[in-house]
Image: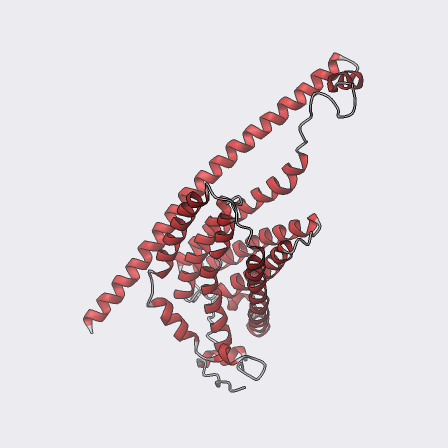
Length: 359
């Protein structure tokens, strides 16, 4: 295999990175990270345009499918999920290798502020960023199959794409941990989705475990962001910007709340719901009311039951109200996040144009 020799900056020697050996593929060693970085810097409006078209496609796609039968597309959906699973598994191996190597050489604290422009890592950082565009296709299958499209789904896709793009452009050094966690969780998640399309029913604890890992991923992201923020407040030299830190904190914090809300709704409240009871039990002439009276045996038992039902309804009303309030708040956060990213990208583009005029 004809591989390109590594020509990384000199400071990478401190990491002991002698990459691009025979165990790596040729495409992983084609370019320095600077090539991928410059490509991203030259296209500041690309993520904004992609997000705008994505949201428009959701709106018009759902309207178009409103009076049409859902499409199953099981074979295509399986190939889609299996491909993303394999990609995520490969990304997990490569990025975690970099994380463990850097942690072993310099430790966690310095690794948050030292940017590693190694060729292999550079490729996988760029591949991760571009995969966020590809993953927008997840929503296509939900729309054409007429599945429930949750706020969490499209909010996550939009914000993670914008954040990842800006983090790569600003060369966020803490990004290695975000990417490693995301690759790991996605390798399990897309593998699970691929098995589902084959009608392979996994136990409930499997989906619960994946959602739990997603919540833990958000906890890990918040920890990295807060730790990095403390380093910036201490004025330590760091290849990190306040914009990435603050927007990352809002993003991971909102993800944490939304995934916890989803976990409670999907696995806790759903398990407490009871099937509706008809007036009579099938195959019997005994009415439900007669059975209830016999079972309670007194009006006090009936009063306790009514009290319990009222409490349940009250909790449901409070939960629904809180859910709507949180969803509305997150929508405002999303709009502010999108506006901030667009202004920053426009500002960077303006500075670049002014610089070109000077020379």
